[in-house]
Image 1 (cartoon, rainbow over the protein chains, first blue to last red):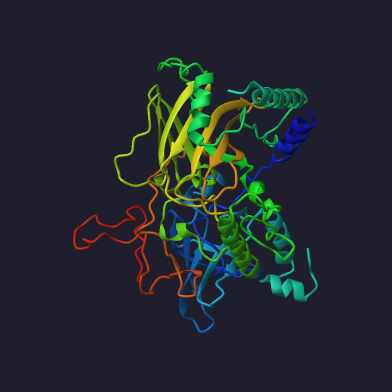
Image 2 (cartoon, each protein chain N blue to C red):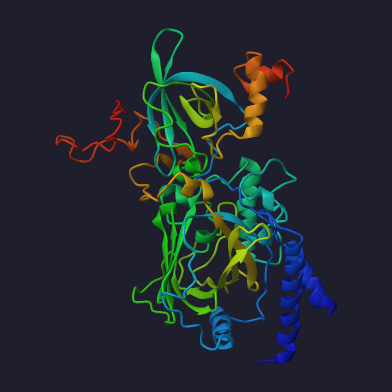
Length: 160
Length: 336
C-alpha cells in the first residue's frame, strides 16, 4: 500500500503544464535576444504566411537612402490567437516596433512588440524576441524617457 | 491475468479519481493541474496493453453517427507532462539561460545510447542557449509523438469507423481506424504510423505502430523506429465548466526507453480563434520558409536579394501570365 501511495503521489506530482511553448519550426540561435532596439519604417510587405510571418520594412538611412529590413514574427495561428491578422500591417503604414537583431549584422531580426497608429501595442513576436506584456510595460517606461534601445536604458541605469 | 497485480493498480486509479474529484469540488480553472493516470498494470508491449484494454472493454463500444462523442471546433494545446519525464527542469525545454537550468537530464529513463544523445543535445543547448537546429526547419514532418505536443491548432473529427485528428502544423492528419487491425502495405514506416482504436464508452483508446524515428520536441529526446503507443482520449469538464480534452499516453520503445513511460497531453477550446472565425488553411513550407541549416550546423535566415531566398508572396513559375501573383490582394511585389 505504501508503494501504491508513493506511486500515486509521484504521478500527481508530474502534473506539469507546458502550454506556452513558442510556436516555431526552427531554432533562434541566429538572433541576439539580449539586444532590443527600436525601429521606425514604412511597411513594404506584411507576409502573413506559415511557417512564420515576416514584416518587410523600408527604413530611411541617415544619408537619405532606404534599406529594406526583414523581421520574422510568429506563425499565422499564433498571431490569430492574438487577434493579429493579414491586414494588421498594410503597405505604406508607418510602424514603430522593437526588434532583436540578427547576430551577423544583416538588416533583419525578430519582431518584439509593435505600436500601431492609434498608439496601441501588439505582440507579433515568437521565441526570437520578447514582445509580451511585461516587455511592453518595461518599454513604455523607456519610451517616455526617449530611449531607443535596451542598451541605452541600461547604460543610463534605468532598469524597469 | 494476475489479479494481485491488477488490484493495487486499480486501487491507485481509484485514489487518483478520488483525489481529482475532491479537488474538482473545490473549483478548478483552466490551469487545473494535469494528472498522469497510470495503466491498470504493467505491459511488455503496446500491443499487449491495447489488447488488454480491448478485452476489458468487452470488445469496445459500437457507436453510431448519432452516439459517437463529438469534440467539435478548434483546439489549442493546453499543457503536457512529457518534459518532466526527461528533464529535472522542464521549464527549460527550449531555452537554457545558464548552467543551472536545462541541462539536468533525468537519468534512468532512456537507454544508454539515447541518453548519451540526449545529454549531447542538452550540452549543445547549454553552450548555445538553445538547440542549434531543428529538423522541422527544412520542412520535415513533426511526426509522432511530436504531433501531440506541437503548440498549433487541432480539429478532432470522430466518425463511427475512423477518427481524424488534424493539426494546423504542416497539415499533419492522423487517421485512427476504429475496430480494425493494423495494416502496412508501404514496406516502411511513416511519420504518424498506423493507428487503430476502439471506443470504451466516451473514451477513445488507440494503438499506434510503424512510426519513423523522430523526437518528442525540440530540446527533448529522440525516438526510434520501434516506438509505439497506447492512448486513452477523454473529454474532461473542469471545475469552471470548461472543456479539456486529455490523452493519457504510454510510450513503448525497445531501442530508446528502458521501460515504458507515461504522460498526459491536453487540449483546450481555441476560443479566440473561433470567436474571430479563423479557419485552418493549407500549411506550406516549401515556397515560404527562409530558415536553413548553415555549414556550422546552426540555423539562419535568408533575406530578400540573397541567393536561395523564397518569396512567399511572389509569383508562380509562369509570371508572364496574368493572375500568377501569390499576393493578389496587396500586390506588394518588390525586388528581391
